[in-house]
Length: 110
Image 1: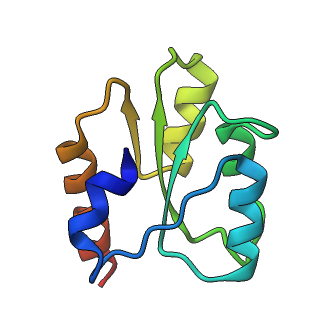
Image 2: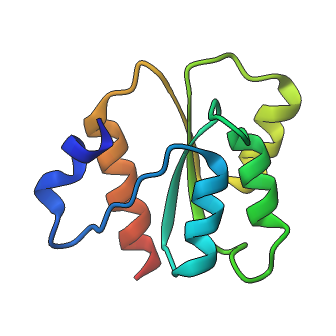
């Protein structure tokens, strides 16, 4: 779905996708990224673990994170994400809202 949403912005937004949280961390170790869209439910390592790993690593802790979830978060998870992610979005996700949030975060970074 993300590929379709961002396909028309191919010249300004470079999209990389992974199948797991561990793959995302490997990519983050290989290249510099401005923004990570992270699902809470992923194989091998969930989104909360990925977010925590990123925020404790000084080399990548500045990356902006948008979290997507289809599950009800605990109060602790909500608080953690309020402090460590730029946005939490809930499924079913409206692609236009996600795109607006990404564009807003990218513009603020400039």
